[in-house]
Length: 317
Image (cartoon, rainbow, N blue to C red):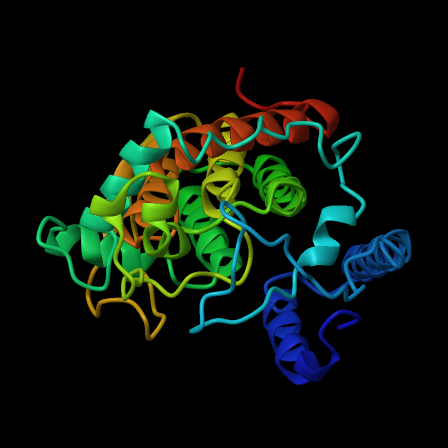
C-alpha cells in the first residue's frame, strides 16, 4: 500500500482472502505483526534508492546512437542506471563489453537478420515466431511472476523453499533491471529501425529501407543490452536453484491485449522460458541476436549473484 496507495481496496481484499486460510489466534496475530514490521523496514531501506528520480534523457547524436521510435517516444528510465542495487556491489558489476562496431561483419549479419525477420511484414517470420514476439509484450513483472507461480505449483515444495524462491525471483528481477539499464545508458546503442534506415551510411546500402519499422513498437530506451534477456536469464537461474532445471510441464499464458488470443507456451524445461523472452525480441525486430546472446550471460551472472548473497539454506544443490 505504501507503493501503490490507489490499489488499497484491492490489496486489502486480497490480504483478507489470504488470511482466511490461517486459523485465528495469537500466532496469526504475531505473524501479521512481523509482516507489517518487515514491510516498514524494507520501505524505509529503499526510500532514497533513486527509483523515483526522474531525469531527462538526451542521447548522443550520430551514427550508432539511439533515437526514439516515433510510436513510443522518449525514455523515462534514465534514472534507473543509478538506482541502488539489492545484491550487486555496484550497478555495472556484470556490464557486458561494448556493442560490436557498426562497420563490422557481426553487426552487418545481425542487421540483415533484423531486416528480414523483424519488420512489420516479413516473408521469413513464421506465424509461431510472430506469436512469440507478441507474447513477450505483456507486462514483464506480471509475466515472470506468473511463471514463478506455475513452477511453484508444479513442483511441490515446503513453505520455506517457496518463500525463498519468490524472494530470489523478485531480487533477480530488480537487480537485472538495474544492471541492464546501467548498460543501456552507458552505450546508448541504436535500435534496428534506426540502423536499417541509415544502413547506407555504414556501408550497407542493400539493407537500407527508409520506411522500415519493427513488428513490435520499440521500447523507449537504448538497445544494448536487452532487458528481457537479462531479466529472463536471471529469473530462470533463480527458479532453477529452488526447483531444479527440469520440472513437470507448465503452460504460460498472456492475457495482454497485444498477445495473440489463445497462444500459449508449454515446457518442462526452464531454460526454454529463458530462451523464449530473448528470441521474442529478435522476432519482434527490436534486438540484435548478438545482444540477446550476451544479455543472457549478464542475466545468468545477476541471478547467481542474488543466490550467492542471500538466504540459501535448504535449497537443492
